[in-house]
Every structure is written in structure tokens, then in C-alpha cells.
Length: 146
Image (cartoon, rainbow, N blue to C red; front, side):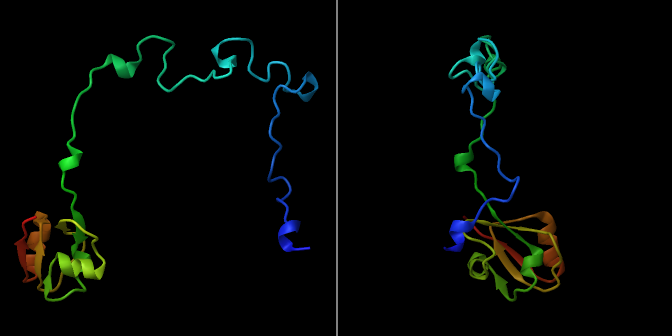
């Protein structure tokens, strides 16, 4: 006999499912816990989200507003100064990709952490704080085109 055949759930960890509508003696016979008549007693008696009994629901009473052009927004890969700390020389998107800091797409450098080295950083965007921190450490920033 193998070990898998002898495995059983721990005592008290499983429960028998409620068998509805199987006679009054079962405790859930007759109306099977659904009460008397009405929409919720029927076969597909659940009501959908936002249903208000037939009156025009709130989400249809108010006009549609706003628009987000998410298809054409540029999503930047974020790189912080603390992750540039252990690099040397020139830092550009190719070197960041080789280090595994970004996957693809344009790069934005943010100012979390400290930078104590002079680096030449080439990226598509810089936060103001990151730009000043790089230049304060004696480095240069260069903005790349997309």
C-alpha cells in the first residue's frame, strides 16, 4: 500500500456540503432554505450588481464623463539613484538593461537614495531632484529622445 492511498484530510478540516431539497428530515428539505416564492426563490434568482428593482440604476442616471487616452501614454521604467550607486562611468538604457534594472521602454530617473559618485547618466526623463543630485555629485545628465 502506498502512502498516497492512506492520506486523509485532518479531522475537522472538511465539512459535508449542504444537500438541499432532499426531504424534510434533512433539515433543508421543502423550500431548501429559500423562503416563500419571489425572485430569489427561483432557479436563476440572483440579482445582478447594480440592479435596483427595475428603476434606472444610479450608474445609468448620471452622464459619462472623462476620458483617458491610455493607449498613447508613455510608461517609463523607473530607476532610482540608489540603484545607480554601484555602477560606474556612463549609465544609459542599454547598461541598465544588462544590469537587469529595466526590461524595455523609456527610462525615468528618480531621486530615491543617495549618489556619491560622478556618473554620466543618459535617460529619457529626470526628476528635478534626481538631476540636481547627479550634478551635485559631479556627474552629468543627458536627456535622450524616444
